[in-house]
Image (cartoon, rainbow, N blue to C red):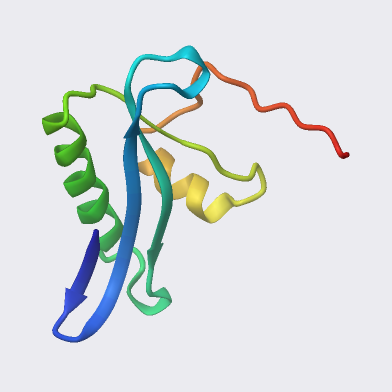
Length: 96
């Protein structure tokens, strides 16, 4: 989804429904969200997230998830301000 003012892109959000992640029932996943720096905290991100949530509900899911870096305090603050919190999964990784 994209938020525009005329020909100017104000922000975007990308997500989908996945039914296979880690054996969980179908849920929505947010992959990316971005808003122009000069209009942050103006409600564009909130509006985009709510619009995506509406579409996910209509698709039959009742939960939305995302994954982000622990030190990305800006996006973490945004998602927390929207009522999101830590979920039931922990990421593990290993250098190869």
